[in-house]
Image 1 (tube, rainbow, N blue to C red):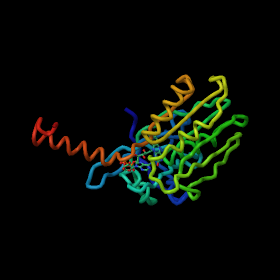
Image 2: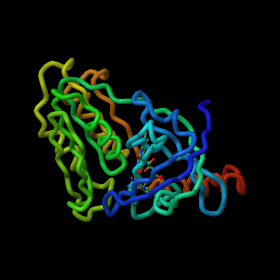
Image 3: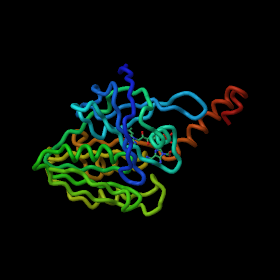
Image 4: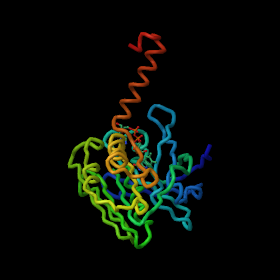
Length: 251
Ligand SMILES: Cc1cc2nc3c(=O)[nH]c(=O)nc-3n(C[C@H](O)[C@H](O)[C@H](O)COP(=O)(O)OP(=O)(O)OC[C@H]3O[C@@H](n4cnc5c(N)ncnc54)[C@H](O)[C@@H]3O)c2cc1C
């Protein structure tokens, strides 16, 4: 099991109204890796206990001994978003990792994400070598959520706006993906997506079944699940029912 390291919050700033960047110092050196971009934060849960939540190291500065994580602030915050919204300099939190892999570039790259995948996309496009052709499709609520990236590669960033629809309820990314013209040679292609669970299925199925892309040239990951709080509450209630009433609660 990966080591647990203690991090200390050293700063916080709003990147956009719904994205908060937290800077950490402390035992951060192990999280400065391009082949493992993510970590798990052990966030406190209301009422007691802790829960692991996965986050991307958006940027790191080895000389300054600092890593930064961007927290999407969503409407029904769970423990992760609540911690990210409230973190203040001096706060301490345990982190586990690194993990989750990195990004393997190809001459032609396509990146897809919503607010949860946006930090990884920012990191990836800012790390692409000159000459790489990249397109990013990023779903956010509206123009206020768009970010500027420090991009050296030939990158086209397309912002797709939900315009008030709830996150995880649209097919904007899938429709955007369907409009993309891919190179003929899969060896030239690298596709990466970090999205909600249903979008994950739709995007992965389109890449594999409709376009016939080999698995080696795409990585599609479910970054979060809409209504996961209700789902875990329902699972807890079902478990409680089973303990109280035995098999009757199964029906
Ligand atoms: C490898 C990896 C890297 C990630 N990196 C980042 C990152 O850098 N920054 C980041 O903000 N997130 C990131 N995520 C997503 C983050 O881990 C999840 O969004 C996480 O579930 C949020 O935890 P929570 O405790 O706030 O919400 P949960 O307890 O999971 O859910 C509570 C409620 O919030 C809703 N919800 C959860 N996430 C979102 C969302 N993104 N938008 C809208 N509603 C949501 C759920 O549907 C549920 O109703 C990453 C996920 C993975 C797998």
